Length: 193
Image (tube, rainbow, N blue to C red; front, side, top):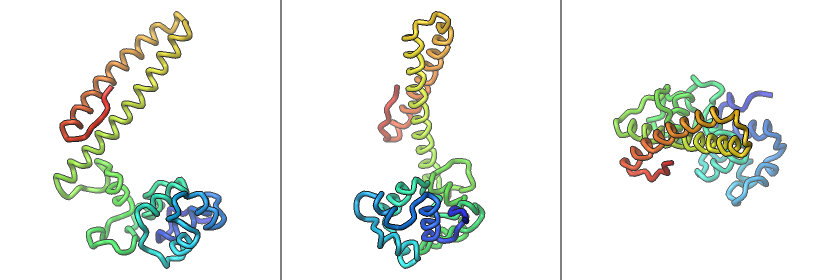
């Protein structure tokens, strides 16, 4: 069976992803998507190419129902150098490759996509900072759990390890606070540990 990620056209990618994810019919997939805006008929029309204009909520619901990253449905990511093949896009997307589109969509810095304006670069930097803060917060939560488990164990041999972990927590908390302050100065409300 062909890989959905390399297929041409969003309808074909959705149909192939549905099959590869074990949904035999459009009804099987539609039944897993709550909300009612993605019905069996809607899916059949999308997959056959009769419906090219999807609402954002339909597209997101389908991607979530398939547990597929959005870019994989929107662009032929299995052929990253191929041109974007979505219908009804403005000429601004002409010549954009699947890889460039994914980088633009995900606001990935230092990627194959090059922002066209300073404001777009600033927005990408802001998203990068938000992502970094999220990563730091998850790592802080994990390290705090490690300290709790080691402390609860009562093992004296873990004292040195616990001390190293606590030092790392302090460094990460400082970095987290720094990024949260930068985000706050940009108007983003962010939790800082």
